[in-house]
Image (tube, rainbow over all chains, first blue to last red; front, side, top):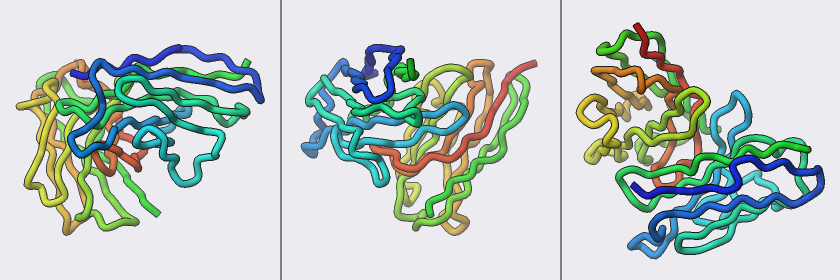
Length: 113
Length: 116
C-alpha cells in the first residue's frame, strides 16, 4: 500500500495566521495518464469529509481562495491563509493514483488557539 | 444538487451479514464510478470498494476481499454493499462517495457496529 504521512497531526493556529499541512507519499503519485491524483479533504466534527482540493492544486467550487495546494511527486502541501474559525476540523490528504487501495493520510486536526 | 443518502447500518453479531444502500440524486448516476469508504470510531478513513459506472469493473480492499460485495442498480440510482462474515474490526461509519480517484461528493454515512 502507498503510505501517506501527514505532519503535523495537531495544528493550533491563531485566527488570521497561516496554516500549513504537509503530506508525503511512499511512492510517486504521478499516474500513467500524466495526472497526479492527490486530494485534500476537511472533516468537521460530526460531518462527512468534504473535498477541498483535487489534482494537487485545483480548488473545488465554493472553496475560498485562502486554501491552496502545491507539490509534486511525493511531497505535497495544503496552505490555509488568514485562518478563520470555520476552518477547524481534521484535514486529510488522499492519493487516488495507486490501487489497491487508494489511501488517506492519518489526518491533521486544526484548532484555533 | 448532488445528494447521497446511506442506510442499512446497525448492530450485528460477529459472523453476521448486513446490506448497506446508498440512494443517489441530483446527477446522472449511471455516468459515475461509485465507492464505499469507511471510518472506524475516532479513526481515519479507509477505502473499502469501488464499482464502475456499468458494473463491469469492481475492486475491493484486501481487508474486505471475499467478504464484501459492491453492486449498483442504475435504474434505481442506488449503490449497495453486501457485507458478510462481519468482524469487530469492520465497526465503522460507512460512506458512499461519487467517484474513485477524486471522490467529490460523500453521503452522511451509516454506522455499522459489529459486537456480540
